[in-house]
Amino acid sequence: MKILSIVGARPQFVKEAIIQSEINKFDDIKEVVVHTGQHYDDNMSGVFFDVLDMRKPDYNLGISASKHGEMTGKMIIRLEEIMLQEKPDVVLLYGDTNSTLAGAIAASKLKIDIAHVEAGLRQEPKDMPEEINRILTDRISQYLFVPSNLGVENLKGEGITEGVFFTGDVMYDIFLKMKPSFDYVLMEKLHLKENQFIIMTLHRDFNVDIPEKLEKILKEVNRISKEIKVVMPIHPRTQKRINEFGLSHLITDITVIEPIDYLQLMGLTQNCYKVITDSGGYQKEAYFSGKQAVVIMPDTGWRELTDLGLNTLSDENNIYQNVMKAKKAEYIKDIYGDGKAAEKIVSILRIYK
Image (cartoon, rainbow, N blue to C red):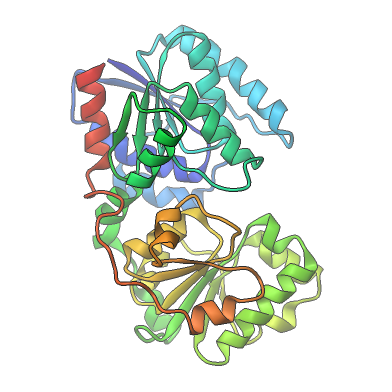
């Protein structure tokens, strides 16, 4: 079997790394990896290459553009050329990026089977690019690898039941694999004590690009910082907007640090009290660590966590209330499987393909 794996963004490299490590166990599978060039940050991804021994992509298309249509169109053209050359049995796709949609369209036109890792997620509003990408990809995939039971129910509600497999979440695989390597040095460096600090990450355009909204968020977090220490690895976009909007006075009581890698972030998360974030992945990693995340988003793709009260959705006006007053529901294990998602995905492809 030949698998053509397509990645384009940092989280996809991480997911590909764990599946690639599973594929490498079998001599009867050949994998070709294509990096579209959509986004890559060595500070965020390098650690996974090192720990998981992921090899460099076979193709790097170097495609990036400001317009969704232009980017997706260029990717379809190049990916079609590669698929015609490589003649894969399956095209393996991850998540909800333009790279994912482009790969799905190119493969479907060539009648190549599509396997979608992280299928079944649904999120409002329906017109957001990521939601469009994931819905369209799910519609034309032959193998839908779903991270949670809610994802299975989402697909069933749309009439999709064939080729649906609850495998669990490959990010949980990653979490368990990397856990022995978590870096706790910042605990001592920042003089932090277990369960006596909060970690905050903030970067989404709908939170940081609107001056009034960013100001309200920072005022709420500043209020929290008067009662418990808040550590904020600051995203370059957020730092830029804080400076641009003249809001620096609102972070003077927050422990602002430079961006940190996954191992350092997880080291802090293991010991924090709660998490404040607008990151899709980090709200899950908080759950893996047994911590509650207050999610500054109107909705989340990981609704099982908010539905069960393990995480809490928040707007800019009630962050303090949700962090300092809201109680976390009793922890529920294995919502995202048993940490063997990659093994199951590869096994299913070997059996059915």
